[in-house]
Length: 170
Image (cartoon, rainbow, N blue to C red; front, side, top):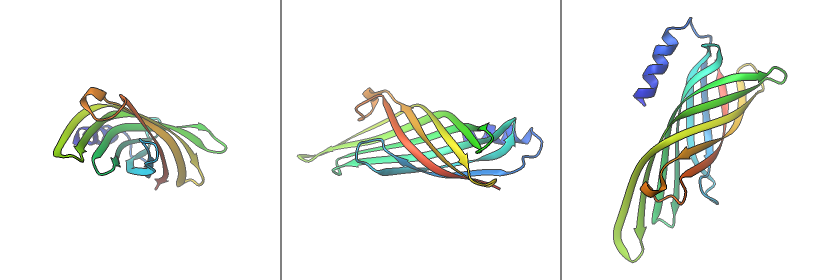
């Protein structure tokens, strides 16, 4: 996380004072069928910086469990930007890129043996943001994580989650 936070702080310190702070909590749905709300995340950054509506860092944590014998956890660390595309109603696009860390456990009912796996991969995200006031907006989007499935217990190389959140600027 410090690897992402330090460049953002250096970047923002070279610009003229930013007008506001960007904070956006989120909920995640997925990555498995029937898993429901399985994660949460947070964006934290500055608005009106470097010609963008917002520049921020993003962290999320997604977990899934099957019958208490198979557990997967995905943590993402990304850098993102938000740019307004439509003026009325005020709508923006957020794009993020970074890394994902995977940790998994797989057990068996007939044995006490538990296998573990850890891997890293690439993570991207895109969200559509609709402002309801100058300080509050809602967003919805999707995240894609690529991790080599030979190093995980996941059935595919690509996992996807749907995310929704609220953006606060003050």
